[in-house]
Length: 390
Image (tube, rainbow, N blue to C red; front, side):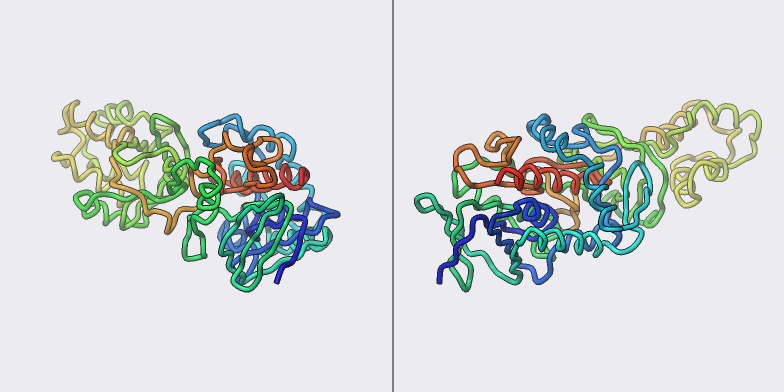
């Protein structure tokens, strides 16, 4: 059985639905193997969907070509998406650092996109496994488990392999490679980092401790909260730095970024000589963390600590060098870094240069945003660029 469409969009997530909503006046089929649309939207932001960021710009993205995202982001900005949210009467608030969340549930964003798709006349088919995509003459042939579908154009909006328990896969990359396109090796991003067994055991006592921090790596610096876990490190600062980290790299933790610990320690040794290092540190750090770090100091009073001991203590707080063993992988990664090489695509339309009529948008492309709504903004912007060109 053959059914013809002008456009088939593979993926009923953020990018796929946003793209379909733009393609008015065309027969559009959005198809997905999941039984519900927008599952990543539903779970994002603790169920409230961090749908964009007030300060989103090209500097918030990582790509082999850092200039590629500029065209889409400039033509459909965060303010454009905010206007759409407001037209649908969805209440929202800024949480921190420009991150915008729904006051209610993230389902509101999904319902908004579904309404926009309905207005554009899109058809959405869920629980439909795609077996293959081919090009025959001028048409694309999309084979499902039940039908053979044909279309003038195909848009790959199927994301990357992050969070596989939700059905995420490498299908988009497989199709890209099938058509001879280069794929930048996908790796987990915005993901917790893990320790070696040697460091995991002593750090385990800190599981659950959170502290404001500055986490740095030769590629980036982030001032955000850090969370110790039973496996290693998490929290916004670690998720951010993970997108720049590679196996074998060390990262530097500053657990009191607003304080020059060595300077204040020298003063404290004079003014409060009888205080223990642990008690003194607890002014700046959670007690469990203060106890852990003070455990590396032999002296029990500040008065007994030579300058070298003060310096060592201060370094553990202000410049703690840690070499993670790895990350938690795609299992918990919020997004994927890497993907379809942007050199293969038009930055204005997201169409592949070598296969007319084939498009890639959203996470499947080698454009990865920082934490805080930037990846959703890339989904919206790349989808609009593509949808308006279809």
